[in-house]
Image 1 (tube, rainbow, N blue to C red):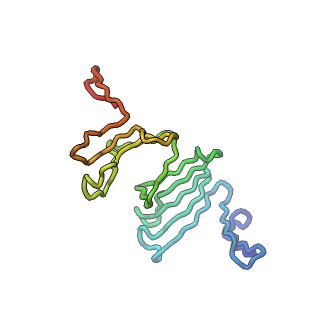
Image 2: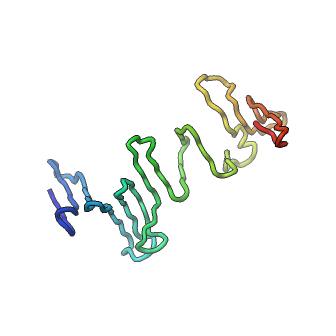
Image 3: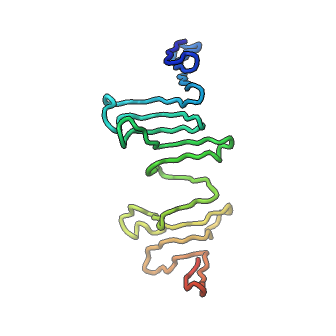
Length: 178
């Protein structure tokens, strides 16, 4: 059992525990009372903006991964996790873009809110023919082919743009509703 201590040895310590195996098993970093615990990972002599990454356990129970990309030595939160006793009420915040690579992305939520005015599907299709079949489909538990959908069909003989949806003219506003 190894211990490296710094500062007030009664309240601030870095412990490396070996347990019963000769292999390294855990690393505990415990902040003093009412103080955050932070690990700094520094690259390239830590002399430029963007060289340092910070892992921070805050006193408000949040966990933050940050980088000093804006100014050397000043961390900016890139990922924040704020836990809740009910895990589904916890909050994960990503500062910046989220890129997901893979064949399927599943979002399990009761409401999906999109701030942008456009949702793009079939991005990167070489042509409209390659995008044929792209759209939005309402799923349900019954396995049938009659799911309501808005779909692009690239066909000279097809006039199917909406299936299973109703279009109503709102006379008061002069607009159409789906």
